[in-house]
Image (tube, rainbow, N blue to C red; front, top):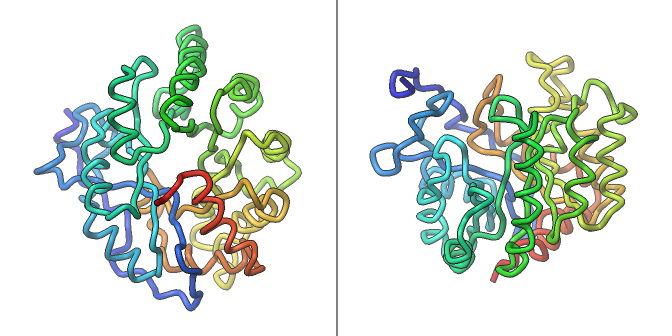
Length: 303
């Protein structure tokens, strides 16, 4: 059934060139690679078919932007078959690491194998369109994930979580039991239009008071979906404001990611604009150094 899905464009093949010069060793801590399908088939049960976004295109646009390091996150497009990320890691010369999608019941041998390749974490989705965390099955899944973190600690991996913003209230207590650092995707998918005083963003801020947690100040275009822009001179200004608040308050717990090639998105962002936004998200050189270089180095352990 999925093989008949229309191919969807997800990224701009000609991003603008930002004027911002990134610091040496700058890391993009959240991207995906798709295919090519002829080599790495997509999951038959996927909900959409994105255009191929192979490692060669990723490397090319990173070079254009001045990004030297990267963390590739396995996508549901390829489900639990992490070979596409393995391939990109091996081609990245030590500057590209990975986060896998796995079952909570994955074997110790497989965890050790992935860690040796360059996988630094395991991601779990709690988005409704990806399965969520509802009912008794969801409760058991959470217990299994927390149990897994003790095995992740043995191989030096962390836990990465992606969830609906409203779920932060009920998921937080479980995540606090993790035996390893917990990295929250895309600023917990809060709605930037609701502002920094909304209960979901307030819960995220409270959670980050625990140094166990880290957050990706990625997805300014996802949490602020005012397209066409409310203010064309300030694209994603609401998302940028929340990202800046996180960086200013928790400078040692934030990393940045572009989210290229932007799967399951409502529009196609200009990646040059997303990079340029870093000038506002981290307005001081020391903050830019932390979120792009120092924090990723400490969290992912680039060699």
